[in-house]
Image 1 (cartoon, rainbow, N blue to C red):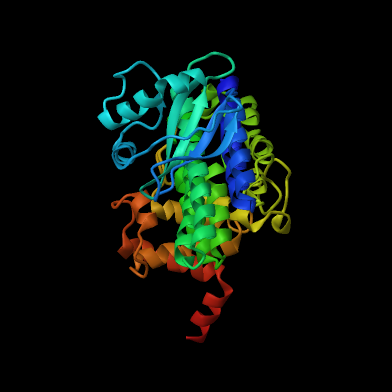
Image 2: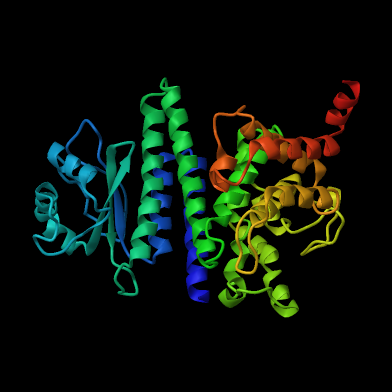
Length: 425
């Protein structure tokens, strides 16, 4: 388990580093070369190349080459039929193997034309870079230094990193060639952010797989954190950061024994102490990674701290706890209360409201709980188009006729402005 966990953490870090390199580097060629080195280094691959497929040409343009013959220029003919075949193929990486192993005739023709050349250069994989429905280029990869075959996990990691490289090449070319197309540049920027977020969500799903009882927990906490942060009026980047913290808040559970996480009973003090390591462990895992949002490791570390100082791992109080961590705390607790666990069923909504009332000011921040109530009320009253809370809770969990008054009552107790308005009315 330790080896698999370390590999998962290393892979996630490699993708994050690659995304940072693509986003920050102004030198196009340097970016491509560094990206190739990161890809090769992540899987200990001896050699490889990145070639561009300009839309207006049938001949590829080599951008970066490593470990191949000095006189090898990596230029190929990619005609319209080959482009179309790459775009329509279900495969994401093509092995340079014996003739007839690729079903698409155009791709078999392409591989057949260069099979001897690839073998001479010890190339084993050809991976297309597809961005926004276009073939941006190809990545050629040799074998692993260990001599092992590429596993399914290796191919998925290669796909993720190649997508990042493809977006980077496409973005840099677009900026150089069509500076006037500001809207397209903006969409590509959000594509890159979306790729990062999709990677985080996949990582969160991998965390939850360890716990068969709470699969989907990290996804829901991320979404709840996003809703609360937006209700509090944070900007889009800060909202994004708090959502990412919600997705990754339990990453430290990767170091906790599966038997403790999956215990079908209330765990004892020793097991509880082991489980309580996960916030600090999460901080250690996330700190070396270059996140676009700097406070993510701290939000993971402090999501079990309490306003009254009775939390862990550091026993912080009120103002010592970052607001982002307080948001994740409420989101995490709300999901725990509204989902079934092996030793208890989920609470009714009036029970959840009573828990929030009883623990606000000691465990939960009143400002955060108020924002949570306002956001949920807006959904129940039909003031928002999206129904994120209702979708995650299930259509039969909430009863607007009964639950709206409960939320309004709690909000009136917590929010001084609401109390003042009620008194004035």
